[in-house]
Image 1 (tube, rainbow, N blue to C red):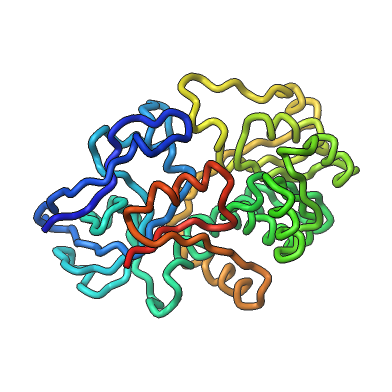
Image 2: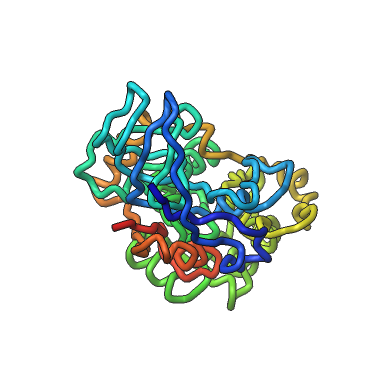
Amino acid sequence: MDNRCWVLSQRPDGNSYENALTLVDMPLAALEDGQFLLRNRILSMDTGTRMYMTDREDSYQPGVPLGSPMLGTVVGEVVQSRDASYSAGDIVRCYGNWSDYSVVAPDETYAAKILNPSDDLKTYVGALGANGWTAYVGVVEVGKAKAGEAFVVSAAAGCTGIMAGQIAKIMGCRVIGIAGSDEKGEILRSDYGFDATINYKTEDVSEKLGEHAANGVDIYFDNVGGDILDAVMPQMADFGRIPVCGLITNYIASGKVPGPANYDLVLMKRLRIEGFFSPDFYAREPELNPKLNAWMGDGRLQLPFDTTTGLENTVTAYSKLFSGQNLGKVVVQLP
């Protein structure tokens, strides 16, 4: 059976993906023992997959070899199985390919059955998936947010950022979001409870933080690194915490990336900077999802979706993550 699949045909130049990814027909290999065949229904678009497109040897995820299918989180339906734990008809979230079908080895792909398949499946790559867990762990455990503290998040209108801001608000923080347009800022304030927003394209981030967090930033949830991190560092409060979730501005770097321009402030302000990576807490889904689901149920945690239909439009959807065209979680839905 042929399978339409996006393959990495060359390493992308910056954030140009049209020539780097090619949609091809690839025959599906026969299933081996311990595998199942998944008909993909939802493809999760995540900025971290940009690292899969590099050949960096020090990355947290080995790069995808040229000519190989592109890898990412998917939700789909099992159609054939040679694994006793999975049966035809099961709905599963796992690492798979940007394709119509994925051949899945459960032990290697963080596979998990979705026990409530009548739910909107997009939720399981959003608030009840890696993005939701990342927002929770970054705010509550790494950031150790406390009531009355000033919390700042970059890429605030993206999937993880918009949830991190709401969770910090639940913790009682004053929440400031850094986003790329006045329109996004207005939506974050009016619809998602942010106390203040900064347009990094038109405003001086450091100066505005001085206004919005007069006593200093207690927690900076970093999704981007680069110039935004440099702008936030001088405004950090003593003993501030910087959970590092993503480095959007660094993913396209071809060589070594310099550290923060104000690195000495780590000592002067006694800051704690800690990186964290969602696969480290995938196994905690049974613990984390009831908390997130409860907040969703009472309306305190919401996540908008930017949905593109059709496998052939995957690159268009993926590019939104890096051009700032999206609000919330970007997904591709397959008919």
